[in-house]
Figure 1 (cartoon, rainbow, N blue to C red):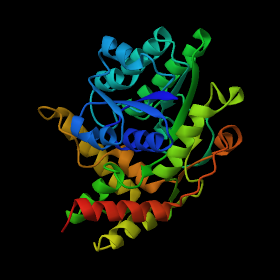
Figure 2 (figure 1 turned 180 degrees about the vertical axis):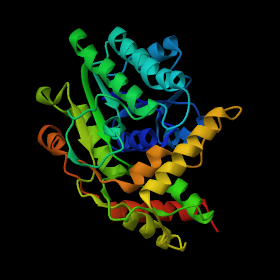
Figure 3 (figure 1 turned 30 degrees about the horizontal axis):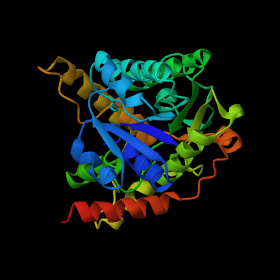
Length: 330
């Protein structure tokens, strides 16, 4: 099978492209940073650099491939709506159009469980429990992109969407690096009682899910799938585990949720009126995510994708910590 992986210069896309090569697939990759895909090219991937906002480029990318794994997109909690819409919705529309015109058989779309988040606790949330209003631009545009993907079914494209929660492992440049830097600056506090349980996903488990989505039969098509390790843990236990692995002091200071949320609200308000609207150091979304329970029901993925997460969070954190020490000595 010949596939295209978008966003391959990023963490998730890069790790899946490598996994696909190891499984014997022929892989074409796209990304904005050539240096981010050098390891894939050395392993035999074909690299085509360019911006997926260029519809003609996307047509060329999708030529002569059987399936597309679309991992590219904008991630974040701060910025203009039009920027998130361009990177998550318009780009996905370009990919869908190219798939249809180039006779690509299947599109596996990487979505996000951020679409569920409304600032409240959720335990075992199911795929259909999408809120009526979205908490931020990222969640809204990821959901809109999903709807475009599912709309392409009527034109004959086989589609699936995966919503992986907090993916980590070697190469994670988002979740734990940010927390490590905050702790080094003395800015990290346990928000609330610190007992809230959340889901994580080992990147190895996500690779298995993405690969299964490429091969799954008819009953699995046209559905969104929650993906996680299926074993929620207290978030601050996970954070302190990584800090201990890196010989950094654990987080012990507590901050009441109401105080942290109020501070984040004020911080955002100030940044919105400053020239250039700089990114706040504290977000309401971040405060809520660090203080609330948040876990996914993965029974649909188990049923239709035969998804069975094998790699524990602690193994993923060991892998991340080893990688971090190798790339950030001292």
